[in-house]
Length: 222
Image (cartoon, rainbow, N blue to C red; front, side, top):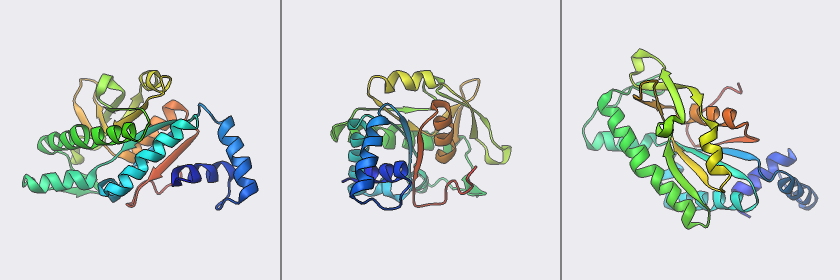
C-alpha cells in the first residue's frame, strides 16, 4: 500500500503501526472521511529525486481516488539556490529564511511557478489524478504583507481566498500551490512553504496538515 495512505490511516487510527483489525477500522474511517481536505506541504530534497517525485504524485492520485480532497503546497529552496548559483546571484539568509531582493524574487517566481509547480501538477495527472498548478498570487488566492524589511520581499500570509480553492476541489481537482503571495497592490512576495501550507489548511478547515520534508520546517506545535 502506498506510504501516503498508510500515513493517513495511521493518523486516523492514532496508531504508529497498523495491524489487520486497526487497518479495517481505519479504512472505514477513510470512507467516512470522504470529502475531507488534506493539505500536504511537499518539500525537501525528495522533490529532486525522480523516483520519489513519481511516488508522491501517485500518492496524491490515490488520496483523490478514496474520496479525499488533497491540496499540495510545495517548496523549492534547493532548486532556487541552484538557479541563483547558475546565474551568479548571491544568496543570503537571515534566521533560515532567504533574503529576497528583486532579482532573487524574479528567479524564485520563475523556478517555483514556471518549473516546479507545473511538473508536480503534470505528474499527478499522469498518475491518474487531476491537478492544476497555481501560485498564491493568482487571483490573489493568498494576500501577504512584508515579514521583515531585512528579509526583502519575504511575505507573511494575511488572507486566503478559500472560495477559489473550493471551486477546484469540488470539481475533483487538486490545487498545487507555489508559495508566492501578492501584496495589496499586487507585488509578489516569497512565502515560506510551511507557513503558507498552514494558512491554506486553516482557511480550508482541513482535517489534516501533513508536512513532507527532510529539512527544518515547522518545529513549534503552535
